[in-house]
Length: 640
Image (cartoon, rainbow, N blue to C red; front, side, top):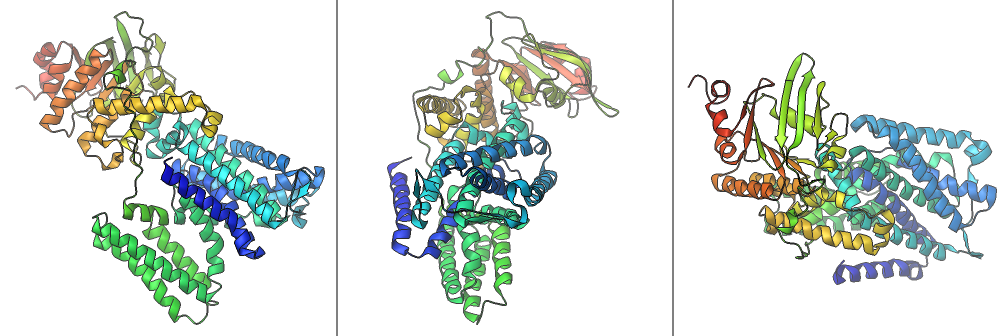
């Protein structure tokens, strides 16, 4: 964090701490306190929704578990606050794991339904378990005591603020670490994540458990704040409000979570007072107009795209001055505002402002690693210094119903070689790649890599054993920068745990510094050093191909599978690609190359195998294959 951001953060904390002293109004103090508690929930929910891309409708239940853990401990054991808060975190995390382990094996609407059912079951259990929760009667609490001292409203406000700051720092550090990059990669491309050694299922569970723990902390604070908890509080409506807060504030940003919390707490109350609503509508219209004006000036937004938010917010401001009362229009205006933000500002309010003002984090470069040094570990992992077979596939059959995509294919790849795999479209080349990397499990046959059987292993396990790949259809993590994409490939190089990350202990800081330097060096190696801070989805197609190679090399592979790397490249780019592949081979990495550019295959490959309709029809030196009649007939153009 630079000095400017640190100064802004300290100023914000000081202002937040001074608010109850300046205000002196218990109602407003409680209102801001509620916003801070909801923000803690949203920090966690954003990890699941914003980063991993999963839809959870169970966070109201987890919030309730935290509240009732604190309530029951106080009711039964008169436990102090320094016992109830950790207990609420732990219990909610356990329930989060119990939910995540089965639920995260499904995705999309199925996951939403499972988590919704979880929230409903929790609410029913709280209501029915009267021996523990007092059932519908609820539990009455008082403000906590801290080391024997009863906290008043202001002191408890400061306790909540301290928890908010701690949660903010914790989440910020996690999401800027290898864990956060793994979470975000899951959303970008689950297949590519697995092939980078990041287990999709495992890291989804990790994300859910961390999110649940934060919901538990917030729930326990909420119980003390309200001084009364009942089952009806933690219902489906609260879950929907939490999701709306993430969407409206903006995902993948802590500022968005804070803003979203403020919106769901303040907006209903804002709509109760016509004068306050008018002021808020005018301020919103001004902010949007200024942001859009800056975006248009910088060419970041088209006139048509800019018109909708400006017209919408200005229209809302004008309508506010036409209304004589809010009583009849309160729910309609709330619904319209929500619909407008969700539909037209899909990155949320904070995301819209950031895009409009082109606010991007600058990448600070560590130049301690060179492009040559970036490859020194690649190809050496598990290498005993001997030549010979690195990969052997025997009798591989890959059948989809009645279609045999691969039919008893044998493939032997020698260590240190570039082995070409060619054939017409639909001949089974990419299917073979998917079998070698564990995306498909072969119907029959075996694959042995470096003395170990590949069959039955997960893609992430195979990747960590030394097989890296690129994809026929580019599978980058589009919302992540080029540097972050390569750092996902370097995920295996981090050994620091959650405590190291949260406390920024020396082990994590050293690993982060070293791997960032290596990631920069890998980008330099493929000629993308100047584009480190550019989002992958914004790169030209040819650069995306090169970025995939850099990310694959970050795995320190013994075997690199390149699936049509020259597709879509210009002649100068192809020349550069050839040089890069030769350097990769010279560094000790064995390469399997799928390519339709025959000049690339013939100039690079030591041996070539040819597939046609799922069967191997030829294999040998490039010149031998080029002269083979079956290859000419099947691949190079009939009886020419």
